[in-house]
Structure formats: C-alpha cells, structure tokens
Amino acid sequence: KEKSKNAAKTRREKENGEFYELAKLLPLPSAITSQLDKASIIRLTTSYLKMRAVFPEGNP
Image 1 (cartoon, rainbow, N blue to C red):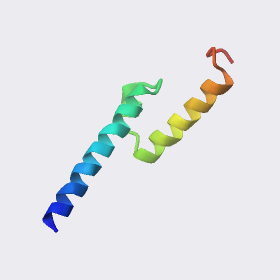
Image 2: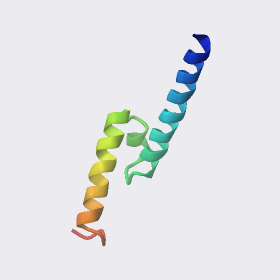
Image 3: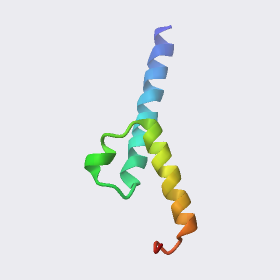
C-alpha cells in the first residue's frame, strides 16, 4: 500500500509540474500564472489556442 501511495504522489507531482510549465507558456504575467489552479490553466490554454486559430496572425 505504501508503494501505491508513493507512486500516486510522484504521479501528482509530475502532473502538477506539467500544468505549471504549461501555465508559464501562456501570454500572461507570471504573477497571474503562478496563482492559477489546474482547471484554470486548462481553460485559459484552450481559449488561447482557439484565439490563435481564429486570429493566426495575432491581429484581431
């Protein structure tokens, strides 16, 4: 059981690291991205990618 707990903890740590790396790629100040939870990171990333598809040159 202890091995399972450690594996889950390691997985969560890796997952959280990936989320925060993704957040750093968003075009937002680090003061904002450092405060985001996982759901917010996914929502903002999805919105950003949709905007990039609509405005590929970056000009609205």
